[in-house]
Length: 354
Image (cartoon, rainbow, N blue to C red; front, side):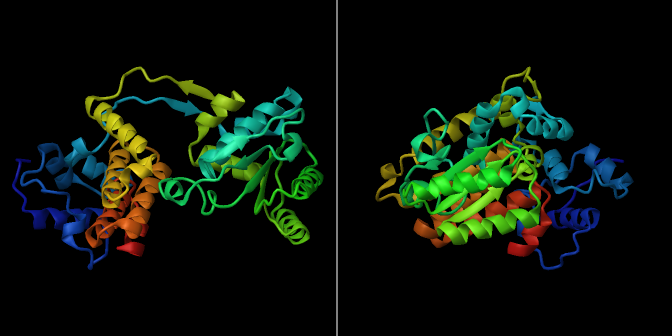
């Protein structure tokens, strides 16, 4: 089929029909890529003319990548980690038989740093937890620094949390013992998080959490093997299992970063370094908002994991709410929704928040 001209409105009508969006109230200026092409590539015209609805084509990200490849990563190969769920499950189950208890504790701390809070410090001593009875605990962090984080849970920088990790089969007994020991230190912990490599029945876990919370007046949370499996396999944190539990396979990157990605990565590192010193933005808080949004957009273009990119956008939204102008507040939310659609095919996020 010969290449034909499409106006922006005609382009959007075809896009809506192909993707079967079904939302009549969506604004063209949101769904339309910036400066939509007046002439579509011949390959896309051919696909449009011969197209039948398929799972592979019904994806905004696929279409946007074809139309605007410069907005996406240009690195053709990346370092990947291969890990089968069944293999990892068996590896966790047999931690003690391989004398990997210490490795498991380090792995749990690194996983908690990635998922729950970054400001953890390891404990030392003959029994791992030492005199504090905890394998790790949070370090106090100022509100300004916590506002700049893009992973983790609320209050992790304000409150003192204790972490206990166990690979023992009798996790119920171990959890009671660890929580009791931590509570008796009198160090003012507001939350205790216990991570076990065993599967814990939901009913038994919830009952024990409630029992220990009432008994010691400290919120107790228990994470079991199912949670570890979800965080590593489903949310793609296999690098932690490979580096700290020595399970899985690393597929080395044969190529360097693409030229655009190299530049983006350098910019992202520089921005994150500047944001880590929030004091440098004193009197220029709106500039920090701008920097945070640029970092989120760079993360998006580098095609970093969604949790990381979404976290950066949420950071930009928090900073804009605290220090930004009305336009910055609008822009941060707009870009987050734009990313949900054109990078992650997530129309639920769009429908809920647009």
